[in-house]
View (tube, rainbow, N blue to C red):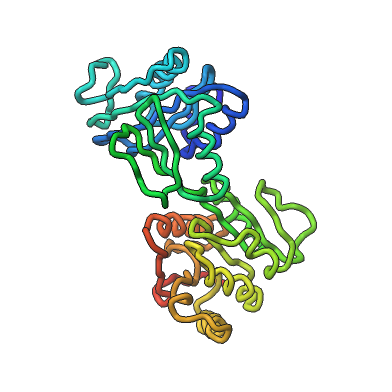
Length: 327
């Protein structure tokens, strides 16, 4: 993203890992700026920017400090010396103010394209395994989260989780809107529509026309996968819901009316699903915002997935408390 625009479009990229890998693939070193302390401000500890000689991605404030971070980051690229910069309260930079108050502490480190930690981060990201980036600004490592956090002397400890996946089952405007909004927020989205249209969906998402028996577990859902079923067909719904509810998927929801809910749940019980598995189902799908149009329903679904992802365990949604969504 070139920096010749007054609009901070690069800040829409919250997860900067793809940019880190892209720059490394070009054989370039880059600067990685990480918030390590925050007292106020719109961005949390762990927010990051990637900066090259001409580009930058990510954001650390509401536009107050990004230019100065980029300036310092390019000096770090040139001299290799990490920098710790405090903005706001307690900062010597009196000409850079934080209108929101408080303070932000940022550490900027130079990362070479051949850095072993970067290679390990790429491997863990590809394998959809949580990773921990541990650095003192000069030396760094990246380990799988399950291996524990040897972070005692580290100045930078950044946890990375697999990208949110969204699997949408269906091909009608509700399915298209859910998939499209998921793509807009940066998720890895795929549409499954057995024997659906030959043409690819008119949005840039993956598309699979195979039977659900083949497509639902390729790849198998993990806890960072959300499954949104919108077929309006009970038999097709079950073909998607049964493997989804048997998997570790972090969210499973189905579009449909309340009047069909008992029949749907009875079918899941007949298929051998136990009550804990069935209780994971969000039905009817989405937060209760009175949604009716495809885009409104999509908004309610994406918001519910975000809400569910904030918990440490699978969110349990009582079907009896869910809003009505017309079939």
